[in-house]
Image (cartoon, rainbow, N blue to C red; front, side, top):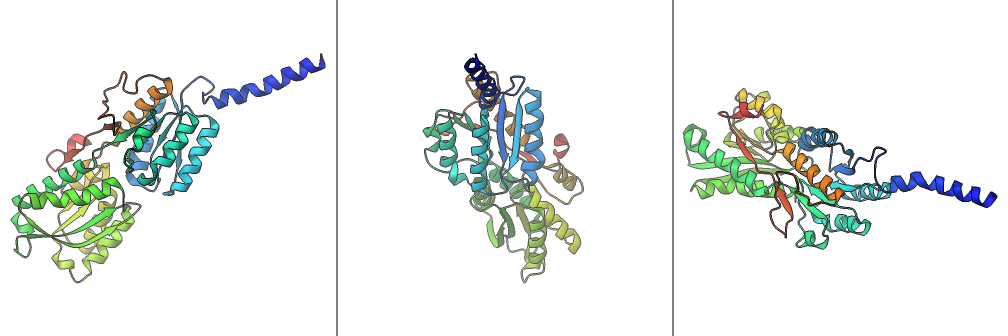
Length: 338
């Protein structure tokens, strides 16, 4: 009798652990372990994180989102914790796109589906190493192309922007995070749009910032305006709106007006466009990236085709990616995005 009682006690003690290990919430909801590479990022923390939380609640899922603070090692540890907790699926925003293989291997060993989002793996063939990994994001080059085409059209329509009349665009650029696929592609493609149109360009300065921050944009723009080439700047290219906001602050403080463009179409950017302080931006559709991420994650956790019952399509078997398109935002259409 005593042995039977002890056995029953052991079984009862094990039950809550078993339920937790299966990842299910008390009401049977799908449990998603997620991260944002850095809460300091205006776009990721201000757009994607709240939509991930809102949409998870709408879909009846439970999501825990942690801040990786720009450290891949910290993210790796956070994934280990999620695996130990027994989450049903991982939704991971890589800190270092070149470290995707280690993240995928962790998920594969644990047998947990994985959706990478917003930062695409840069390691060749890595998405083919696990049958339960997918990616949700954008075509990085597309944002730079759209931004570049906007700038070219406006440059041609405003000949007075060429302050020294030399036919060359003298520009400065706030790049963003070195090595980030979006930062690298936007840097290349936005300028390439001018050369494709037969317009010469001259880069006066370029500055990277791992945090894509407003403060960085302000500080660099102030420094550039007071430099030896400050009076020669004819165009400010910003690879995100957060840095653009800082540049705008610096320009306003100095009482200087220079054409300026960003990427993301954050709410504040629309206000700057309305007030004539920003000439254009590109909608980085974080809302639909968040929804696609969760749609795929929930389907994967349920063991059905990840696009079943959704509006999303997988690009191909190699990238295993859902691409959310960018959209140009100009003084003519900005009110559509309010």
